[in-house]
Length: 157
Image (tube, rainbow, N blue to C red; front, side):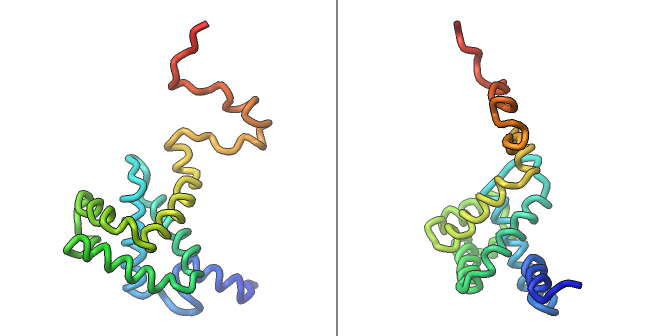
């Protein structure tokens, strides 16, 4: 049987509290957050589900902040204001331009720093960028990864 704390933790990860379902506004905010993470870390061939995983982790982390609801509301409004239209309705070029326009805001800095850590900690992203993961459990980099760089020219003797 799950304890109250465990249920609350699951609710935060799911984006709702207690017995409430996610509202349409919360779903829209989540979709916008996931799309913003795509703009911040654009990689070809990374599945949309990875960006959604990262958005869930970011939302769970930031939802514990007392000022997150206000910060998110202001930040999403600033994105649309900078775009001159609803930010999610824009093509990628417009999204990038509007995102650059708010890059000095607390909202941007908060989302960027949280998403940066979560995105590049994702095992699917590791595989995409060629990071083999931790080597500690395999004897360290001397035994795994020390000399496997294949994109540098060979040193002359």
